[in-house]
Image (cartoon, rainbow, N blue to C red):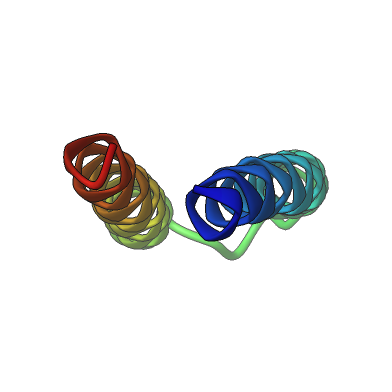
Length: 87
């Protein structure tokens, strides 16, 4: 029983660390994206097509980031289910 409780506490700690780290990473990426877009807006030789292509790449990266978070959260949920079954 103590082992299960220890595993639950460890999992809770790992989830908190992941969420905080992920949120910090998102803030940095979002701020970088804003600065990059501002920089592109001030470059007269960057065409609208190029901006759309870069925006598409940014959208794909954001989707991959969100998919990664979902996968990790699913893993945490499955591990929690496993620990509940051990009771």
